[in-house]
Structure formats: structure tokens, C-alpha cells
Image 1 (tube, helix red, strand yellow):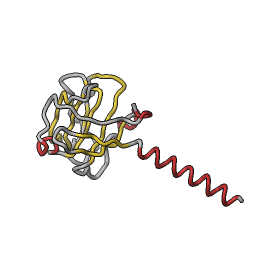
Image 2 (cartoon, rainbow, N blue to C red):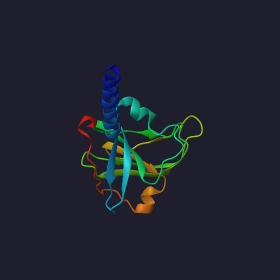
Image 3 (cartoon, one colour):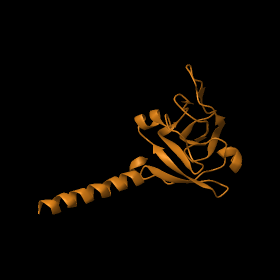
Length: 150
């Protein structure tokens, strides 16, 4: 009986963990028909950590930073190990600013990269992604956020 209860609890917790993991990623669709799977950075801690200390970002991966409201959100490359492209999107998911092939910061002080207009989302992609896919300002991306990640 104890084994059954333990096994039931274990299976339920694994199911919840799978649900939580699934809600940490979204599919982002681009005007050229391509897509990436983006890890969500919603909490302040997730946004501060970002892609720091990671070894790579694959062509079909990204990180989507979600802010509560539009604003001017600056990013830096401290503790990054590879260059990236950074896209700022307004509340309608329109690209309002692009920084391409942003290099890692080898030592302090690190420069900051900020958009020219307010954004609510920031998407980090593998370096060169924007160029390879011909993405331009004011194009709209598409993604659906999980309810608990908005």
C-alpha cells in the first residue's frame, strides 16, 4: 500500500514538473516561415540571469524576456560566452529595434544595448540569425504565452 501511494505521488509530481517545463518555452514564428523555441525569462531573477554562462545557443533556440509593460530595457553581455542577435518587440510583437552580432563582454565595464523605442519583449537569438533570415524592423513575430507566464 505504501509503495502504491509513493508511486502515485511520484507520478503526479513528475506530471506537474513536465507541465512546468513545457510552460517555460514558446514557439516563436517569423515572417519568413521559420521558427525557434524560446525559453521564457519572466521573473526578475530569470531576466537577470538570461543566457549567462551557457556554452551555446542553437539555430532553432532563443530566449524571450517578458516585461510587465513597455519600456526602455537595456541589455549587456556580461558573463556571455558567445555573440547573439537581440530583438526588441513592442506590445504588438513588432520588431522596434535590432542589435546584430553583439559580442560577449570580456571585462568590465560592459557596454549596454538599448532600444530606440519602448518594448515589452526582448528576444535573443544565435548570432547572425537576423541576417540569415532577412528580418527587418517593424516586422511582426508571433507567439502565444502560457497563461501563467504573461
